[in-house]
Image: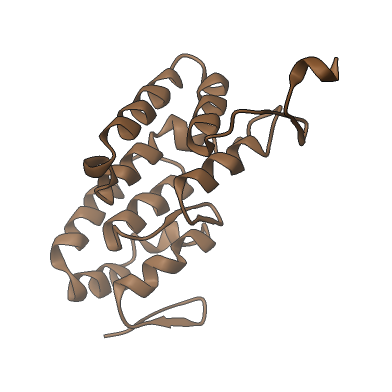
Length: 176
């Protein structure tokens, strides 16, 4: 039984999951009988998990992230129109908004989505130290979201230079 959304037909939940991040309109689909019937016909346990997740009070892009992780746990990190090939690319994207954090990407820290993705993909099992550091940084976001945002950006990007207002400073003292 195929499922159609915005003139695109999906034959399986994996292809559907790949497109979720592209539109916030997906969030309203998660409550439709047709969507849930399609997912249930593919994997009843995933349909039950989605049904529970849709009861959460979170922004649409966060809900879409949660459902995407359920439907295809091995997808690249995808959020609000962005697909990142790895965590380093995500870190670079976070830093690219310096000196002001991107409010949409701040949700990654607020809802601890990076560590959740690491758990979902089992990355946390093979990279325990990196996972633990990300968890600590995300927890810092409860006290200071901006500090945690840039800390996560620098940690994931493995960048040791300062980026400010889209300018990369190799040596801060030579620019004063």
